[in-house]
Length: 146
Image 1 (cartoon, rainbow, N blue to C red):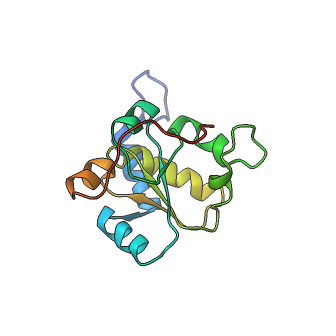
Image 2 (image 1 turned 60 degrees about the horizontal axis):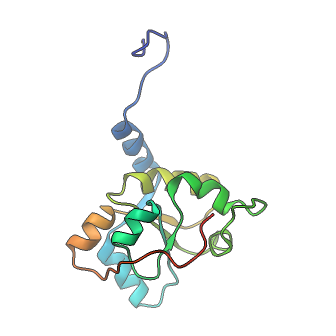
Image 3 (image 1 turned 45 degrees about the vertical axis):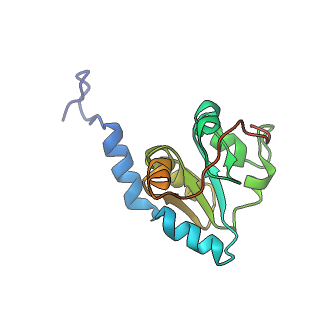
């Protein structure tokens, strides 16, 4: 086995490979099922992993914004970049969202490794959320960023 740069013993993976691998390790929830669970009173925290400019264009109301590149620092209690509501959510149901469900699938694996007991990926991301005509909003994120 040789990678694209000729290194023996290394198999190069594509983004699709990494996302497929992640999806085998996590749970996913449909946007409609998540909204139904929230309507039933389940205390879900929705974490939007997109960039601020993406969030500003369109987002799920009451979601918190933690860009994917800042996630690990945002959940680390001793980090100067922590986001308190996210640090406190290790035993709370957490649903991760991105544009299509790929970044959030990768992030779900990381949060599981960091001790989050009930983390799910929102299948299809904001694209499917919007396609199912679920509530959305626009405008800049009002909260702190890591």
